[in-house]
Each structure stands twice: as C-alpha cells, then as structure tokens.
Length: 377
Ligand SMILES: Cc1ncc(COP(=O)(O)O)c(C=O)c1O
Image (cartoon, rainbow, N blue to C red; front, side):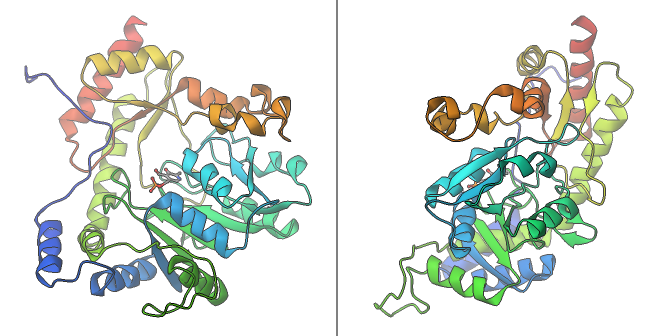
C-alpha cells in the first residue's frame, strides 16, 4: 500500500484532451453564445434518448422550473415530490409559486412510493415529479398509471439519469417533460447545465418561448409572453459533445466499479445495499450502503481520506420548508412518522464514490476501510 496520505473525493468529473480541443475550437470560431455546438449537442441528446424535442437550461433546477412553467403550473397548484431528493426538485416547484407536497419513498431504493400519494391528493394537485435517484429509474409503470388515474401531469426529475432506461425507454421520456442536469458530479458534465425533453410539440413551443425572454425569435423586441434568459454557451456544449462521445466508456467504467464494490462487500455482515428497480438498468451515481451507525462510519472514512456523503436530508425536515408543515400554518403533516423510510435512509445510508477515474485499488481500499470499521464497531 502506498504510504502517501490518500484522498479520494466523493466526485470527480472526467475531462481530457477532447473537451479541451472542442472548447478551443469554439473560441477560435468566435462563437461563444448558443450556436452550432449547442445545436449538435441537443440533436445528439435527443437521439440518445429517442425523444422528439429538447431545450437547454442553465442547470437542472432551472430545467425543472422551465418544465413546470411550460405545463402552466403556478400559484395555487400543488406538485407531488418525493421526500428523498436533492432540494432543487422541491425548490423548482416553489419558484413557480406552486407548493411541493412531499411523498414518502419506498424502503428498497428510496424512490417515490405512489401508494402513499393517494391520500395527499387535493383539487389543487396538478403534477407528480418522480425523481430517478442514484442512477436508476423510479417505478414508472406505477407513476404513469397513478398520473393517468388522477389526471396529473408528469414531470420527471432525471437530473441523475443520463443513460438510465426503464423497460428499454430512456428516463425523462415517459412523462410530459423530463429534466436533466449536467452539473460536475453527473454522468456527463458541462460544469453547469440542464436539459428539458418532451415529445409534445405544444409543450416544446412553450419551452422555446419561455427560455427566450417570452419571444420565439431572437432579434425581436416584441415579447408575447413573460419569459427568461435560459441560454447556455457553445463552450458548455463543446464540453458536452466530448463527454457524450465517451458516455458508453463512462457507463462501462462506473458499472465495473459498482461490480467491484459488490464483489468486496456482498458477504459482509451488517451491510445492506440499495435494490435496483425492476425494469431499470443502473448507471451508478454513487455506491450506496446502509450501516447501523452511518455517522461514525463516515467519520472513520474521512480519517482515512475517503470522502463520503449521507443520503439526502429529507425534504419534510428541511428548516426552510417549516412553513409547509401543518404545525406551523402549512397544510401537510410533516411529522417524521409519515416519512419513516426517508428518515431511515438519511440516518443509515452512506454514498461512496463512483467516478470513472477511481482505480480498482482505490475501490479495494474503500471496501477494506469499511470492513475495518465494521469489525471494530
Ligand atoms: C435529483 C436532482 N434533482 C435536481 C438537481 C439539480 O440540478 P442542478 O444542480 O444542475 O441545478 C440535482 C443535482 O444537483 C439532483 O441530483
């Protein structure tokens, strides 16, 4: 074992000569706003996902906001959001003036449990936002059936979902709109970036209008609608195109690392793992384990130079969402006992690194460290 102090970060994007060459050529072409690279990146994303239309947004949170706006969701409306997710999912709803209603997650992969949503439906409920978490799909058969039965829009938060398929269909393409993120820790990254897809031409037209200051064409100063500037730059698209070229390599390497983790940890007593949703592939986002004392385990890992993270802090517990609680004048009972699974996930779940440049030896070192922790616990 090397004697140098190890540091293994939680995430690490994988950029190389291809990304650099693409950005340089964009600069040399003197086209830095949305241009040919953005067009090509969008076309290739649509092809990958087998979807008709797509538009870019500055990040995943704003992609969700834009998608919600295109569905005409706003003040007075409610959107069903899983309790275990990144806060951007819920914040995008609040940005529109609508209210997120938090839904308990299942106990095997912490995705939305629609069975728990029924009793939270009101006449104001307009949409459901499944979140495809940790590199796998939510149960989209259940989500789509629930949405159909209750006449709800479906906006998929597929921020972590590039390359993820459910019953051989790319996530993000089941609902009315699907939203992706290209943040630094995502499967492909442009630093910051977001993408909204749809198969509905009318929704697409609204997306175009809303992201371009409420007008269809640049160069006109007459704005039929209120909109925003949600453009990206061709430099970001240049990075994205190079990332897309190596998507399969990224997915393969992530899967190799995932398999190595399983090999080393499978038989370890006291460890539990996330179950992949039936019908979904996995493009591992992190390697997730459950231990009795997650806090102590994360501290032990940190001391050995391994950066780990807890699961997401449940939405119903977020201090900034106190006002949504019935006990503080809101309309939903946000007591912990309504969200036992997401609380369990937060208290016992640990995210371990999976990124393409993580070496096999690093994975072994991480697994040995976990075993050492469990032995001395
Ligand atoms: C599930 C989920 N939703 C939304 C987002 C928001 O994406 P962004 O950070 O690009 O705004 C993220 C990523 O950070 C995420 O993981």
